[in-house]
Length: 243
Image (cartoon, rainbow, N blue to C red; front, side, top):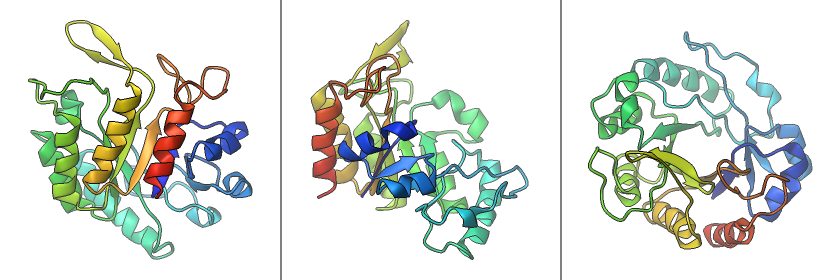
């Protein structure tokens, strides 16, 4: 299983490996290789589908991350680009974030519902690997009324549409959501574990942590780059996920 995280400084690559992370999102392939990590460099794609740098220089990368939340209108051009890339890197993976909770983005995406976006992503850009973004995590067992679904519902939709070819982001640091007022919710140990186990139960083949460093609270490391109170929890989860 691919296990990655956002915003890992180069000097903390070895610490990330100790936490059970095996792939650096946005990492430098050459530096990653020196400490035994894989990398997923960002793949800038221009509006006309042109690749903005030579991917062949990234020989140690397992794949390339796509822009976030690609509008439906841009998915066909993205697929054409990925097909060209497959001529030189047939084994490459192209993960791209799909935001499951941001219903305010539906007009931007060009769809009427999150389900419709998943279907269009699957139909129009089958070479990409969708990566479920279900944060802010709310910690609520019931379905939210504004069209935002419980984590298990979202994982079930991903499995139904994409089978076993999808990844998921796991929220670690507190993230805000609006519920009459801005609320910062930080997952407990069991909720961190629940996020990963639920995603895996529905066929997720890769996980990423949001976030390595702190946002409103500690990430996997604290503000000084030292192991946070979540570090051992994440290490245990990663050991279980990697089995």
